[in-house]
Length: 152
Image 1 (cartoon, one colour):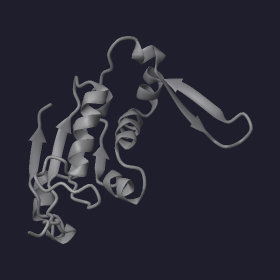
Image 2 (image 1 turned 30 degrees about the vertical axis):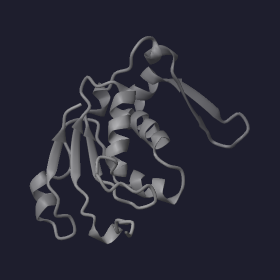
Image 3 (image 1 turned 180 degrees about the vertical axis):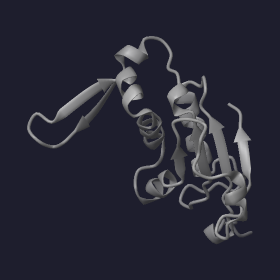
């Protein structure tokens, strides 16, 4: 009996919309990374891009537990002498709230070419307003998927 190996050209990605209001950072990031990789499908294969598109709204309303809001640190480096900057969760949330979710989800994706392909399918927005509507996406020529709101 031959092993069935799913082909990428037969996969039709779906669009998932996640509202981040009141959600915990890590739990939301794991669900988003599973959807991006396509692990909910019965024919999941690690080396084939069978992922979906994920749109996360209300990124400013994400929560963390305990004292992480004051104690969790995010680092960035300009590669110049003395260029290491660090800021807390609260500071980064007030400055660039989407970067917190991007950082968490990117760390859960595979490293390499396939992980970068998955990451390109992630869209994070600060509030409920997105620059397109589900009707526009449904009627476009290259994207014929339907939106599925995900409850976590």
